[in-house]
Image (tube, rainbow, N blue to C red; front, side, top):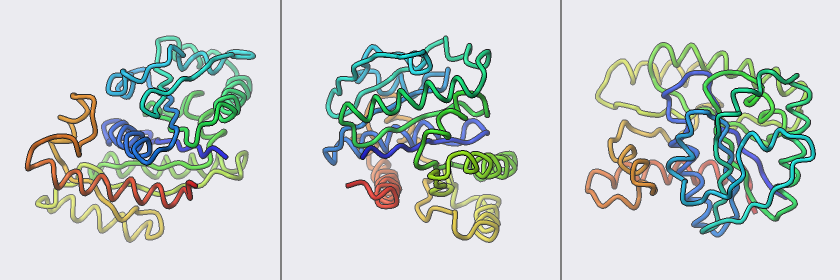
Length: 250
């Protein structure tokens, strides 16, 4: 049975795409067949995973009786973002969600083990449709005041969606871009841990330039041949292992 995970936060710049891309690379290396859907019109995941394009566009998944064939390259099949995603707000949510749910079922029928979905930093029809069809959601967060305020919105959104999608599980909050030398970050992490003791994922990701280098070079951070990348690779691998285990992927 395919497991579907949405990476979401209603605040931008918190590390959503970096998290999703590294999960895709890690899961693929484990031999899993991974579908990646980029629902963010910025298309950053589509840029980094461009070699895995299937020809199917993300907006195609919201069409009636959509037909598509996803052929993975190195175990990853990308459904890339496209400009027509912006038109989804013209559709009734019920229609968009129903079509997307059918597309997720079609992807599962093609033998994928995991579906990873990147979302834009706003609660529109795309994010809502993804959450209504997903098994899991995880929220990266930057330890700054605006991002902290945003996570309250995200948790409230997930709780509202769970009333319609009872299987949706919030895996947790992933502290991202953490500067361990910054007292403000340390304080905010402590505050978050106190406020959400069961939701903070215990594998924070530091503020590492090597992660940005990896995304720009279309590869995971553990393939960056720099001494500075070793710590980042260790942190990211810990995060992907945690998510893998929580999802109970066979």
